[in-house]
Length: 254
Image 1 (cartoon, helix red, strand yellow):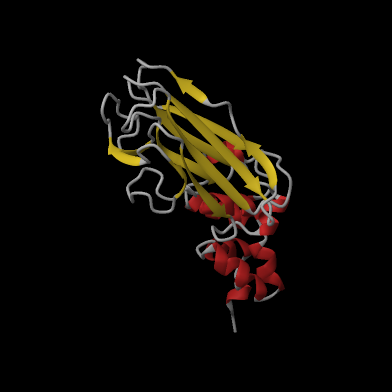
Image 2 (cartoon, rainbow, N blue to C red):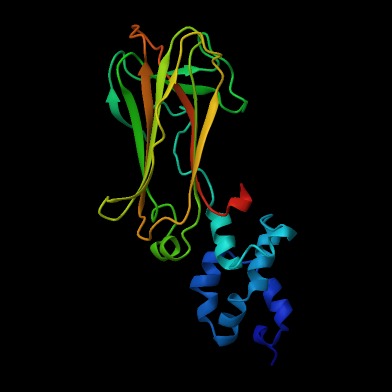
């Protein structure tokens, strides 16, 4: 009697490539030695990348492990929750909330400009006292298991957008830390504060950083940004921030 195991290898690859990665790794790989061999084939994972739009021909020489490449592409998304203030302050911890406190405004706001991305409709704005907010990302909860982070150490890309009002000077600060299980800082991105003078162009600007070749043991990512106005005016004349993002995965997919 003919069974699925009697199928030619290329047919079995095509059939198994239709299944979710979780089923392939947790169930199919344990069926028998033949299926374990097929699930570990480069051709199967390359086929899955082709099927889901992750494959480009010029990647053939740069990708050393198509299984890991597929998993990272599949997991890739913005790990910052509520980056554009659509859910008010949900998911954010308000570390400092001084002056007239954090506020949410609609684009372009008083004496402001629209951001390049039309999908971004809101932003967070600071006051005359220090205003900082943060998120702590637990990588295992987001699907990035310890062995993956320690052995492959995929690129971690951080982006943030900030702008000033035309009529008031302000200060912007950003700190991003890669933390161990015990919250020890393994790597940090903390650029010099950006001070914007009064009567600026009010243009939204992006700041970005890519963590590469960081030490093993990263279990959390801590993101904090904020600032204040530099003229101490009552109200909300400080730095504006929105559209923050942290993504993990191959740079080729950016």
